[in-house]
Length: 157
Image (cartoon, rainbow, N blue to C red; front, side, top):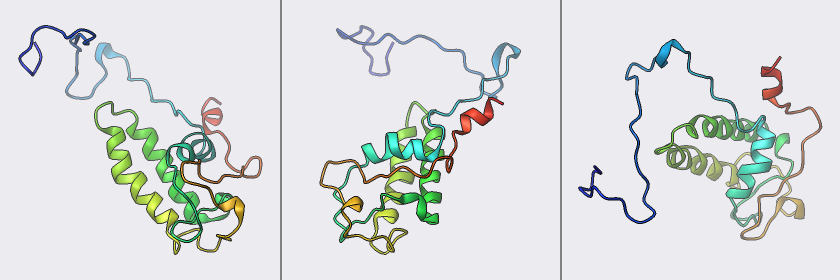
């Protein structure tokens, strides 16, 4: 029975199946819960593969700034790493995790990062490498090799 009082599935509807839930948070069957694995192995991979591609904004160097060499700005690295770590945590919440991530993390930090007085204020805002048109991924240049190692590899050791 659905919460909406309709016992029948619509064409293409999804049938719900009961799930055993341990309300204390302990693993059932005396098996420890598996540790969630990271989807992205580094802040660089997260920015390169995800964030710059989904958070597309026109970067004109006036109303919004960005630095393709983002790793040269300590505050930016810390904020982008916070975005990555919070994304990794909240992606595990299938209900509102991504909404919470966008509202409480991405929109907040990205507004600060793109502010003309923010962490990228010292970047050359007029350089073409630091600008992009509406709908394009955020500017990006790869950091020096080895600067952001894949933490999944060190976890396997």
